[in-house]
Length: 161
Image (tube, rainbow, N blue to C red; front, top):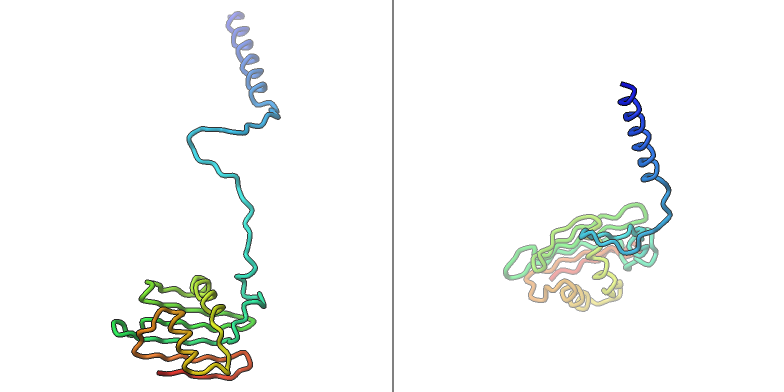
């Protein structure tokens, strides 16, 4: 019986010693591990400040933009609505040519570049506004064009054709 106790005690001590040795502090680092699984180190998330609504560079020259364009194949083929002030921004973008139907930040992200490229001011002629906007939204074959813009100074203009 004593022999069994000694064997069990010896096995327990040996197991404990192996466990401590296996879980010890190993300062070695493994550079290239190829286990077949893809591993990408965690990257710090970077926020593009140019996309935030607090960025003063996002001034498009207007704070309200409401566009509806009909084409021969589709009524309301393009709808782009943007309302932005210092507190809130609301955006809707639907374009049947590009198969787009978005709201909120996703719509704003797509419209941001279009708005930045448009050079619209209160002094821009009606024909030039219509040409720039229909080209920007790829709707040059329109049957109905309805755009209302409220410029930064509060002046609202409608462009209908």
